[in-house]
Length: 343
Image (cartoon, helix red, strand yellow):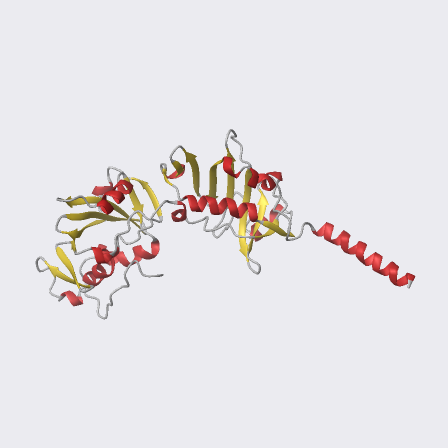
């Protein structure tokens, strides 16, 4: 009996020592530096959130009129994204101690500065009032599964951790931008004018009429007509930009540019300019002819458009590329899905 008791005591002590050496369990707070433990206590004082990924960065700052993206010329920020990030940082919990060797950080996506293609490292810094130094400065690495988590380390330390929790879509600039910047459905558009052609809707079906002969093929054979019907009426529908910048003087003179007029009715329209910069498509919205009674919806969105140009989401921009090409018959070409259709 005594021998059994000694064995039990030995096992319990050994287990305690092992757990201590293994580090905190999944119920512990992240504790990436003491500041992480205190973050929930200073949440109301946070006035700056900085996120770096690759060569790009986003910095949100809280001003008198709310949060703005300082790195995007003070464009309004989406409060929910910042709140989700802070809540995610507060709720992260350690689940496993990982490597403390700097030469192995890249295996977890935690090498910083992030170099090389495919590096997943992201740096997050949190600032509070009356302080120029960040209260949190961490590197976030690869996501892990079951349970959902992420690899994390304090930027000033080599020790790395597997943590349980999520931090949201930090790497997507569009998730940081207040929006949508337009929300007018295709059902509210009566007519679209583009490249000498007019497109009208009847019972939800769009038809194209050319102002003059642009080719010897019928509209049904022209892929540009099909791209028009699947894209242009949906440009204003729940438009959330992928990125944003201030309008430049040379934007309207861009050589690779197309223009369209979206008519809500005979008295209200929106002028649209689109152009390609590399593989990206940028867009500019402006109020067009607006006679008679003011349109409250247009007036609201016009405030968001003034002085800004927006980057089309990549998956939407792909459907617009045929509009930049010459009228060419492509046998068997089918209409692309509307650009507000699910990916």
